[in-house]
Amino acid sequence: MKNITRHTGTLRIVKRMKNSYLGNPQFMAFVDESGEGHGVRFRTAANSSHAYGIENYEGQRVTVTVGTHYGCATLNTITSHKEETHRAKWSADVKANLGL
Image 1 (cartoon, one colour):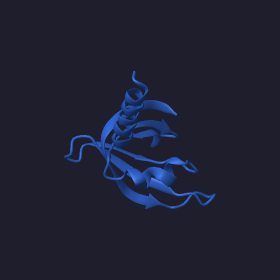
Image 2: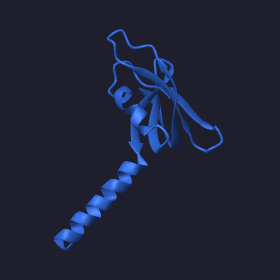
Image 3: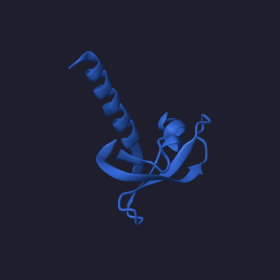
């Protein structure tokens, strides 16, 4: 994958595409960075595990990295800000319980 860029915004699923030749789902998605329809549009890679979980992130604030794969904008990574907040809270609770 080339030309990887990072984008933060609200994830919207544009459409579910045809399944891959192995029967795995693929999606066209969009990250709205401004709240006004400005952002990046990309697809999930064929036979990627991201396609199985991307619907769980719809409507959430996420950070994605998108790269070019065979000339097509393709999802590389996805992280929910909800997960980061949960991890930080859990880490703080563990430190408090350990007296750190």
